[in-house]
Amino acid sequence: MSVLLDNLDVLLAGFRLTVALAAVSAVGALLLGTLIAAMRVSPVPALRAAGGTYVNLARNTPLTLMFAIFVFGLPELGIQASFFVRAVLALTVYTAAFVAESVRSGINAVQAGQVEAARAVGMTFGQTLRLVVLPQAFRSVLPPLASVFIALTKNTSVAAGFGITEAVFRMGGLSRDFPTALFPVFLGVAFGFIILVAVIALFFRFLETRLAVVR
Amino acid sequence: MSTSVLYDVPGPKARRRQRTGSIVGGIVLAALLALVVWRLASQGNFSASKWEPFTRSTIIGALAEALLATLQAAVLAIVLALVWGALLAVGRLSDRPWIRIPAILIIEFFRATPVLLLIFFLFFGFSSQFDDFGSIIGLDNLGTLGPLVIALMLYNGSVLAEIFRAGINAVPRGQAEAAYTIGLRKSQVMRIVLIPQAARIMLPAIVSQSVVALKDTALGFIIGYTELLRTGRSVFLNFNNIIPTVIVVAVIYISMCMLLSRLAHWLEGRQARAYGREAVEAAESAVANQ
Image (cartoon, rainbow over all chains, first blue to last red; front, side, top):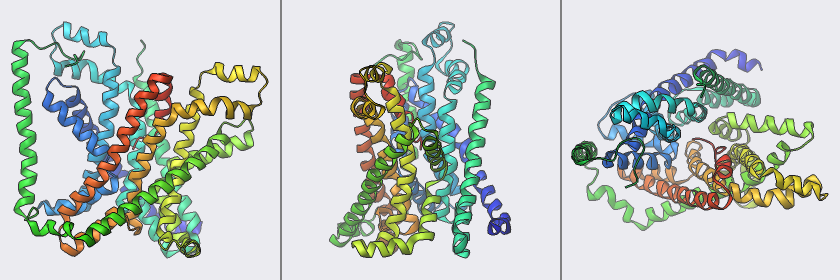
């Protein structure tokens, strides 16, 4: 137990990095994922096909491979970026596919009458999507989005294998330095993740009650 | 073309606009792709010398061995997770609180913990024990395979337990009620009536979760289990051909996972027609969203 308290600053620094990775990637994945979902329901066949291909490829790629592509491959393209940026890119590209699938299922769940009414008053596809469909779609997919972002938070740990000193990386270091304290170190870091997961779940439940619409 | 509710059936003008949109969008995407290919080509990534290693029988053999190692880890993890998940689900559905509550705690703990954290815990803490056990049963790579498989078992077992619970709850209530009425005990109701029906409802979800487990075996790379990615790394460190190697490894991984995903999708359609879409989707919704 004292190992945890003595190294609290190390662990907290690790978790700060975990939260930073998760937060930046979450924003990126939400934007990219929504764009991909819009492409998948658009009237333009080329965009539909491109969105579908993206989701199919990204969902069937192991996250570790995605990290390898961005961490080892990006410098080969002549793009110089810090480890943090490359990790965020890998997480964003990976998670966006899951966000896109959730948002698309939400778009499909919006009542047909809403869309028909929007079209009847002469809205274009973009207007229909932006003003009528997406605001309702996001509300209905808050629970699956919460689980996507929880998975993202846990997935940031893969960055530990590629030299990012986030929480799981610190756990590895501490358990090597203090082999006798393996259990407290493991449980301590696991507890940190459980708190993060609980915070995300509570935040989304709060959003749900806040944004609930009476039908 | 199936008509979407999101936009009107295009008239001649809209059709023309959509065609331009398609062409412009296609050109933009193709240009992006071409830019990446050109950048790669200008660094000599498509020269024959960088791809030549993949024609050597030693490299092909090493990759095949690595593929087997990946599949070995995946199959072991899935089988063990099914057993562990079934046990947890039985505990979770028990009427006795002193069985149910520990089961809930175990399920929730391992669902909220990153798999890599579990792998590190088992690897740093028990690698030598795994090694010793491996030399007894004749598996020389158990020092890394063991932590990987056990961690995947613990995580996927928890998710599968939730899938099993959702599947059993998705069987129409009348089935269990009828079984109780003719005097069956709870264990009989489970064994004879609920589980055979639930198994079919949740088959697609189980296959979907297997894709997650298969993808996660790549985490073995981080602790040095010689699976596809680790072998790929040795190849590109030897021949200095990062991009070709990453492409080869990615194609193998993605085609494997896609095949399994297709199977899950096909099963989903089939079982949904037989047992009702809602029941199958209820089980599917418990699949880890990652």
